[in-house]
Image (cartoon, rainbow, N blue to C red; front, side):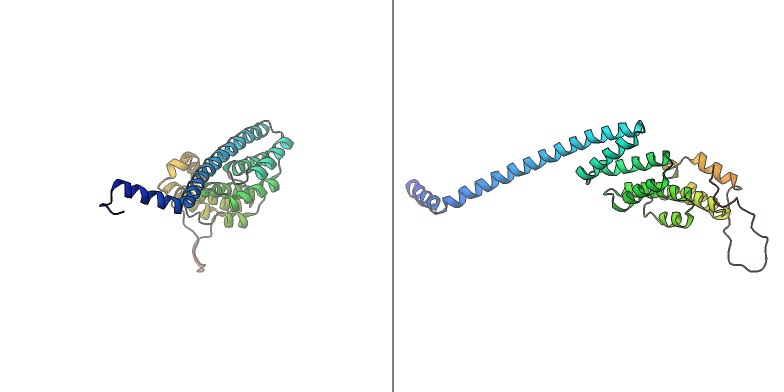
Length: 237
């Protein structure tokens, strides 16, 4: 706008611009307010869903604590169908797996753990599920499958726990040297003290003869034979 125009001339220009562009201004304001209203509505909806999920989860947990399997299954169905994208659904599946184990139903427990390991939004939940699934697979005597489940977690924080459970798998297989090596690696991890019961892992290592495990190499025709291991399928104390 020309700064040399009189106030009256400037006012007339503004009025003319509004007459020409008024419809676009009104539409812009309406759209802007509509977007703001829609965003607020979305946030309120999300808050309501989170509150509903929390209430359903608490009811579900009560069924789990009292070992009411039928009620727990109903609650898990509600969590999965109504709040499947929330952490509550994955927490519920982990709880259901534990409940099924307590009910001596390892196959059902494994199903829930496999689902969390494959689909959980949280990487931490996936890794926790893998650790628990491997323990169930040891119970089922599916040792090779357990070792596949315990492949490199890609997480420094979880590495000691994965070594510890691998040690349990090898112990159950009767592979004492491999078990000792895994327990050593578990104890020597940078974060072992924060994620492991080091006293318990050390006790398992001591039971196998202490540190300095040497893994068997290729056969050369010489050297003392390896010490016999426990019966395959035995569970570590």
